Image (cartoon, rainbow, N blue to C red; front, side, top):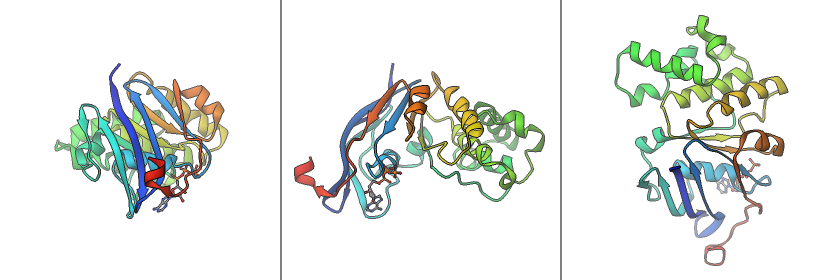
Length: 229
Ligand SMILES: Nc1ncnc2c1ncn2[C@@H]1O[C@H](COP(=O)(O)OP(=O)(O)OP(=O)(O)O)[C@@H](O)[C@H]1O
């Protein structure tokens, strides 16, 4: 199978100090990979590095390939962010309707008629496992959705971009068991269709969803780059 994301000796640096890494791994098309490790090990930071959205003051080195393209540090662009999409830990639901939220992002990437955009958003809501619950109220405020529905709406917003890779940061950490199960069903349905990298604290969840696991064993400490490298 083809790799969607390939990382070799990737480190995240804070000034000249290694904050996370080095790590090397790949995520294949159609696979679901778990990214695990103790709090502070650098899981969220790695996800952000993969889409070149590190906070100010942090940078990365090492090699990052997305599909057949090498992404030099700081050179991530809209094209990269449509191919590999990060869904953050806390779902961000904007003011506006459910449909507006599903379309957010897609509108900037795809120049198409409102009908085509709507069809793509509906397909994404279906893929995220939310369609049946919202089909009759697409114009209702998204803020009224439950926490689990919001998480799946954010998943739909990402899927509307038809990414090759999805990065999910603790997608069920704030959910009760029933909502968690629904989100997990949606993630499981992506297996075979997308490359999914999922940060999880829950070994049982990793067992349920993932083909392979990457372990970040050490909490990140700012060690001198020359030593850590
Ligand atoms: N902007 C930043 N500047 C400096 N250090 C940072 C910055 N962002 C994160 N860090 C540090 O990087 C390390 C990794 O943080 P990160 O949030 O990636 O860990 P994590 O494994 O996702 O943790 P958790 O499981 O608790 O969410 C931590 O030591 C954190 O303090």
